[in-house]
Length: 380
Image 1 (cartoon, rainbow, N blue to C red):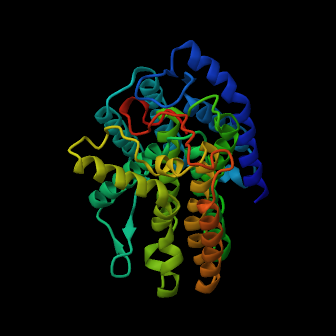
Image 2 (cartoon, helix red, strand yellow; image 1 turned 45 degrees about the vertical axis):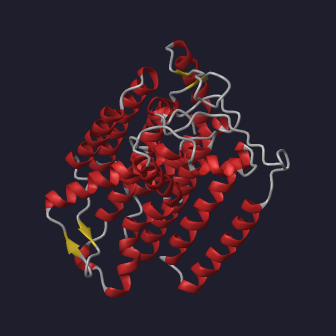
């Protein structure tokens, strides 16, 4: 555990230090979210936050590679995740600068998923009538779908200062706790790619949040949102690969299959926003990638909340769903139920409270809509 905590704090410190430098580069090369008539942010803000995250991850990998336990996590899977992440950061940087079309980005995301497949990172089984081993072609298709859904869920939630980075950090904490406890309780390898990737993921999000919290000095951009989504999806998929489906007994089916369900639990809020946005736009006869201001965070802000309070409310709802699911894997159901009830009560009370700054319901909306193709993940 100490080595993983060291990895997390190292990634956070590096991202905190590197981000201002990347911000300068973004300004110099024109990767800046300008003010347009349909935007709601009031100051041109640099993008390329994903580059800061990638640099921090790369340096962290180079340093912790020599640690006794964490060093064992570096293998073919970690290499594949690193390469896929590198590709998506590069693609996102181009989009942050030149505003690529949605289909090009979707094709790039699918190609990144293909890189994972080349390195053996794929879903091998599903909990259907017990456990069923998937044919390679079906497993590959399911893997690509999980990667695409996770990336775009993070992409769609990236609409307020600090929102996406905070939600992914909370998701990463829940996932790291599950991966580590799975090793301790059920004897899986502690030195695996899921623990390493999620530790770094949480670290870069925390380090980036220092510059991305409202008012944001830099946006993560598509380079950041696609990168974070890929890291989270890849962690989940590699964790399922550590579980031998033939060794899963009835009493262990729940904990063993949770790696497939946890990503959807920790990203329940972004996924709900993604699904609602697609249905809303299709119903209106628009493209799923068209812009609107009906995302969950927009509605919370219209209820009279500042950006900071809105982001914190969504953090709380993410934790309310994610943490009880993790607890459920290793504790009796009544313990998980108590945790869920306590979090639900606190989150509900906080969510229904009024912002002291805007008690009359005046929203403080300071960033562009994440549903717009050219700014779909320009801010967090």
